[in-house]
Image (cartoon, rainbow over all chains, first blue to last red; front, side, top):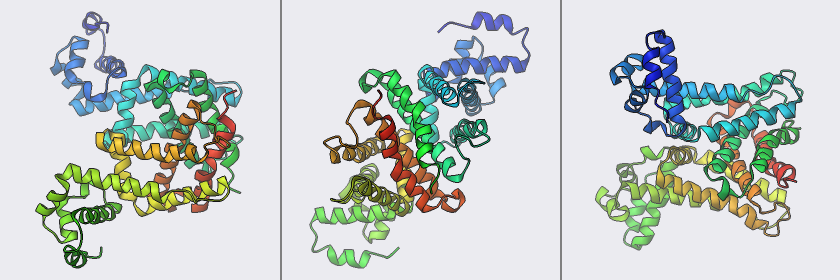
Length: 208
Length: 208
């Protein structure tokens, strides 16, 4: 980890409080990439940022609010980084988005896993952020295809796309935890996560 | 809830300690159907069984061991109840198994949800039982098709079947939580969960 105290202390005179808070959030997200939320303490952030705990409490109120802000930022990053490219064929755009999702989970495994586990385990704040992120990611699929050319927007396909997203999350988390042990190559995984939704929709979107 | 104290107290003279323990486990599983694990206390079981807390501790040691035994029994019930019929066409057998799974979740929603949430949230005991049950349910799919006629047994299909099982779980839990609100009919849900695996395997089992 590169100490950031030198840059942050010189920057402190130039940044507005809001900019300073954003900078601390970015640092929190970087720290979260390789550790769980439980391991991300105010003390650690203070040490890495080279500022006092008291100043952090000034920016974030308490540990809970700090965690919520960091996880929300991490979820926003996930949504932004997995945005499909603006143009191109639908399947190619989905493949690119899926590859970006895999890269995000690889780069942020510990923090992402702790969000998924916390949300599934019933933490209300993490549940809310997780559901918002899942809603944004799956909602984007329908928004991108507003004419319903690929996926008709029905209650059945909404349930299916949500289930598919959870399947992809499980396959990616399982694979990233132990790529070698899984005996599945990266290309095979990408084929699974990129091909599964078109396959499911093609066969099951129309119940008739 | 039907009081069972009358039957259990008369039965107490006839049953072996092991039979008695099994009977208490069955009661625990029934109580768990409509409440979370957190709500299933030794006190409640003692009251429903019409016996003393002390006697329950004699059978189960402590609350943790009691919960573990009840959840393990519930998972065994799930595996038994979702066993496909012995004969018939593969797709029909899978449909029957999927319908049984839906019925199990409907009948045991609260307890099943608390197992899924507890496992996902990182409770080590629940995680172990959940993983064993998931392994049994997905392993059965491969064992039933030992010749690999429907699903070749490869690392890719193992990852895919696991992901599919998690997808089915999510769709069923989402639907059972609010069938009317989902605007998806029971038949549509059954078509999704029964048709998804053959569809995925047909399209994605062979990466070439």
